[in-house]
Length: 382
Ligand SMILES: [Fe+2]
Image 1 (cartoon, protein in one colour):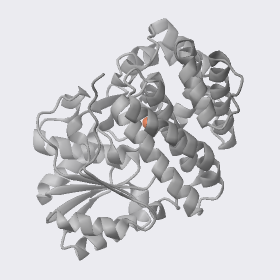
Image 2 (cartoon, rainbow, N blue to C red; image 1 turned 120 degrees about the vertical axis):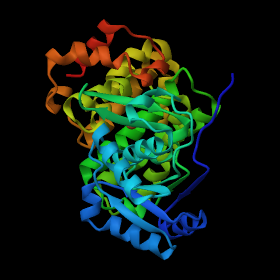
Image 3 (cartoon, protein in one colour; image 1 turned 90 degrees about the vertical axis):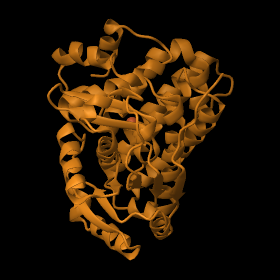
Image 4 (tube, rainbow, N blue to C red; image 1 turned 180 degrees about the horizontal axis):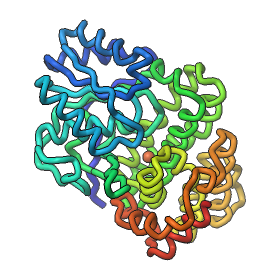
């Protein structure tokens, strides 16, 4: 088996690590940064805090706060125009998956030209992106350390998966002190996204011993800490454990890729502008039920990592225990029951399924599926 392992060159994490990270950023010798964030973090003053710390390192900055949830091609183009107008020599993304993905699109187009839609698919760019430093505030999409960039094409109502080694950030920063302000719903959704990354990577056809180790540790840590992080957001121990866990899940899926949960969730996000983590959480048990006939043994290991007592169980029973554990965790962190509760429409299923089958994330799902089978999984998840 051969494998290529992608990860940012430097990754700084742990409670209170922001100042250490700022020193590292200063050492790169950049002069002007485009800070890419969302309006919430800009209004909360977090972007200003980062700008001040950059100034302390002798780095000027301009603020682009136009990264919307499910960032669009238009968001990328607006940020790119600002970067070019101000002649920035690096990009600093601040936030969760949406600012990071928007910043990746900006940094990739800044050096490769064209529009971000030109890079849909796997490794379509030819040049390294402008240096990108990703400061993470959720736990998490892991976008601060992956080569995945998801941008919504509003005209087609689809989320484009840009899987490109050139969008890997130069440096990732995970300071849980920046995560304590996350509301309960966002904590739950992003935590379930991380669990989905770990489980999809663990049952992926591209899994290898490195990604397996990362995935299992992530599953174990998320199962032990997510409830507390949701219940008691100021608990820095739970927050730090979730920051490490989501990073481990990122290491797993950045290299083993994902499966149908993400391929299908991307379509719900693109079609109805729904939160990514919630879509994943709702779909996860249904896709693993579909997968169980080909990867029951692996799912039984997932059940054990989630804390289920699997002694004496055969693989099929173990797989059912994993699916039950996923459902229990999702319910306890108040994830909605089904896609109907999210506002999805049954009559949209054929087009959602057709688009899901085109998504690069589905290529490594352990069980192949056709249009009818994907439609059935969507229906089961209603
Ligand atoms: Fe995800």
